[in-house]
Length: 178
Image (cartoon, rainbow, N blue to C red; front, side, top):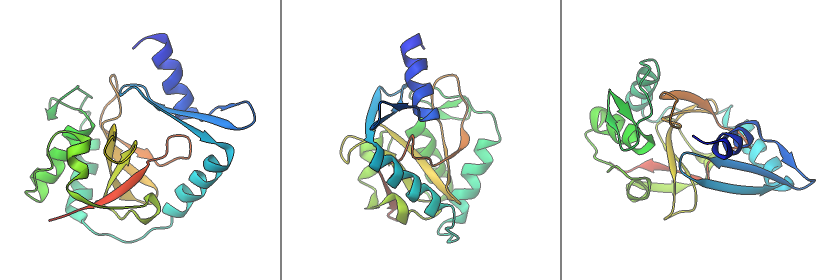
């Protein structure tokens, strides 16, 4: 990872404000970069806060498996989908295949085709969270409730529990169709 990627990733994680109106957010490993206005960042933070009060459980086996994998120090590996390494879509593919028998495919856009899409605020535990435009997503994770999700975030990191935040806000979510 070069200095620019580290800086962009740091900005996305920390949510540093540039000027009076824009906050940068990025997934440096995927090359994604999304700009939010101050109003959008405020709305994103409100959505993230609302998600922390969600108590519904839609698929406990998916959530349990995702949490289990987050404890195993599985490294991010580009195109990986095994215990020796996973990328974001390999992680979601593995969890769904092993808990529900559903094959989502190993690509975020392909996985979009297996969900009923809805807003991030409507996400329920077990749903997929997507970053990027519909049809052009670049990152995916599994929502586990209480404003948290599990994902394979980036090279040099392990599958882990993350917090939904206004600085790196998912674009949409979806309930996996059986």
